[in-house]
Amino acid sequence: MPFIAGAAADFAGNAATAQAKTANVCATKARTDSKMTAPTVLNSQRTLARNPIAPYALPSEECLAYNKIVWDLNPERMVLLVHDMQNYWVDLFVDRTPLVANVSSLVSAFRAAKLPVFFCRGERAKSRFERGLGLTVWGDGLNAAHVREEDCEILSALAPRDDEYVIHKPRHSAFFQTELEPTLRKMNRDQVVVCGVFAHHGVMVSCIDGYMRNFQMTMVADALGDYSEPEHRMALQYVAQMCGSVSTTGRVGAVFRVGASAACP
Image (cartoon, rainbow, N blue to C red; front, side, top):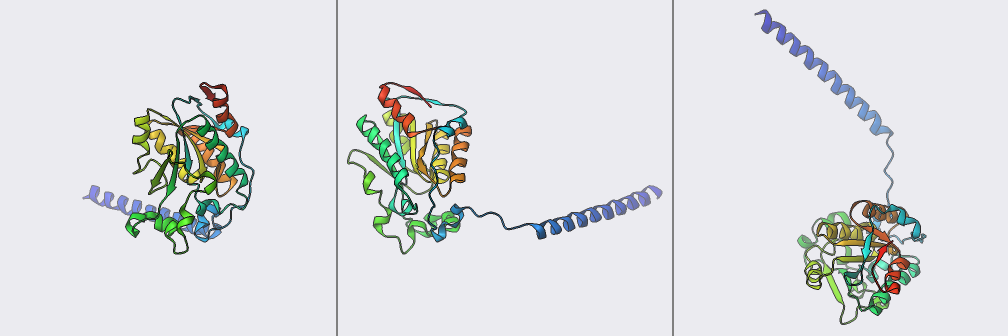
């Protein structure tokens, strides 16, 4: 039985070696963990406390360098989507003036050109089940006891007109379980220009979702707001490289001034 005995000895030796390696790995991990510092907490991860959003310079022309592709924007194919410009969210900004001014400029341009304007807004969940994982990640949100009905309304400066569209959405994406996609299909429009808040939350998710549904999504860099400048720029870079295009208020407005389609940027 020398073969069996040798095999048993080899097995025992291999097992001992494996245990020693495991012990070394665990010891190394323990030393590493003990040296680790707490991760940096971005402002967006502290929204349960509703921290005010400090002013930062809105990205502008320099962000166009992020683009992997640019869409040939055409008024016959375009709509504007104003994302979550509700009092509850916009009130977080210490200085809302630049954001609201640029969003208002886009809304006015689309209205003057008689192009469709869509507004989307988050809604109060009807139950904890409907709130889903959002309750775990973000807390009560609009369902919090202190939130008033007027807090959920879109800013009065941007109030939707009777002939404009208001999309009530249950999750981050403006497309998820809403009438946005079927309405756009009926209009035969496939270019969605997006502004509003928050760039790396609902706006970015809506752009990803729209791309998955074959819509040409354009984020307007200086007509978006976010919890911080790094998060804002991260959203622009991701969308520009992965699923859409980035432009500016001025460049989108130029499409109307020339009266025909124009590459954006």
